[in-house]
Length: 152
Image (cartoon, rainbow, N blue to C red):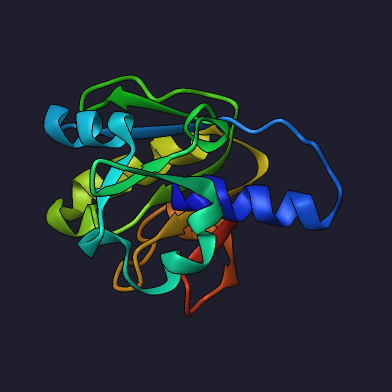
């Protein structure tokens, strides 16, 4: 939900009601269910997120993401290695996942991401992950330290 909140904040500053839809994927059904519930304990709500408490409602000794944000996010089970990639995507965040894959698998995955993205779409990896193989010619770095890339 943090991405949905940040986008909502940005659009509010620009006085823009642009429609957004976020597809959050994972292979772990338990993590997906936790996401769908949108409920977080006091302990989980420490740090930077505190300044966005207006997007949460106090509930059962914790906080639940308000429907205005929860409704922007769809949670789906998706196996990056075997499921078909969706298309017409504007931005893909795949942080700290590819580090667990072989070089060959990473190359295929990055090519799949390229094909899923719209022209001018963004791809964000983890800070320790780097583009390899053909992907180095398909994306241009926008921010090297944050590993944000633009589809050519």
